[in-house]
Image 1 (cartoon, helix red, strand yellow):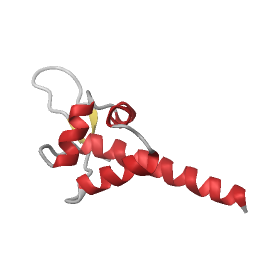
Image 2 (tube, one colour; image 1 turned 180 degrees about the horizontal axis):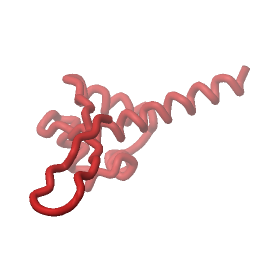
Image 3 (cartoon, rainbow, N blue to C red; image 1 turned 90 degrees about the vertical axis):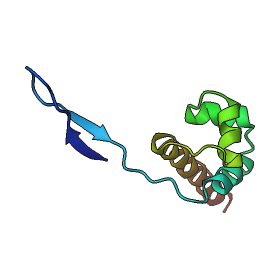
Amino acid sequence: MATWYRRTYGRGRRRLVAVCRATVPANYAATLVGLRHRLGLSQQQLAAAVGAATKAVVHQWKSGKRKPSPVFWLRIERLQRRARATVERAGSLNR
């Protein structure tokens, strides 16, 4: 993540602030549907896992009425990575 200096008007030092530079892909709805089905989560459970307010937000993301913010998209990607790692670990234990 990039950083930038927050401007201060008046006294005080400039502070470094983290900036989220993630981009949400065009196929975000299909990715969400696939992830939710792969993990076997309900919309409410997926909302809780990524920190969304309610299952209505997840429904709006899936239907394309709303686009997830870059912050939420980072959380969704983190959930995907964890799911992949769990599947890979389970596969290596079965061998």
